[in-house]
Amino acid sequence: MRAAELLGAPATQIVCQVVAYSPKLAQQIKTDTVDKSSIGQPGIWSVGVGIPQSPDDFVGRVDDANNRFVGHVVCIAGDHLVDASVDQMSRPEWNMPIPEPVLFRMDDRMKSAQVAITETAHGVLLKYVFHPDVVVPRAKSSKIVERLARGLAREFGYKG
Image (cartoon, helix red, strand yellow):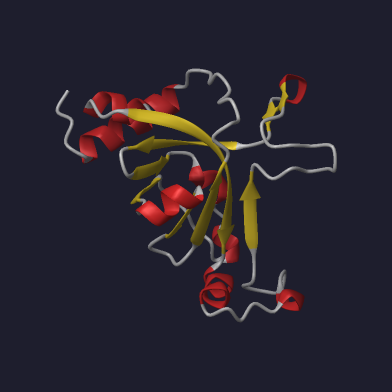
């Protein structure tokens, strides 16, 4: 969001759930050959953020006592999705490196379906499911986030 502000681009935050699929599992998904019995085997992994952990859990639940929010927040700037914190799902030891923020263009089909899918340079498939009716929690300011925002803004043309 901050990078978009620095660029002067209109942007909004949205709550979502996101799942990262390892390259081997991504290939099975793309070819519709997923063997559910193989999930968890070497190279067949997934990691999710914003996934409820129990039957009474729900997307959007804030648990201040445990500093937990059930959801993931991304920025939508025009036709682009920016996920500055996707690296929390990086699992290099599982051949799922996600070392940098993700920025990609969403087509009309993705926007109308409220689902966005992209693949990283390392072959990790990312699937975002939007929850536009869930209130975005108030973020704490972070020097790290500010530094990342300025870096993204510089990369995309901000001179300030």
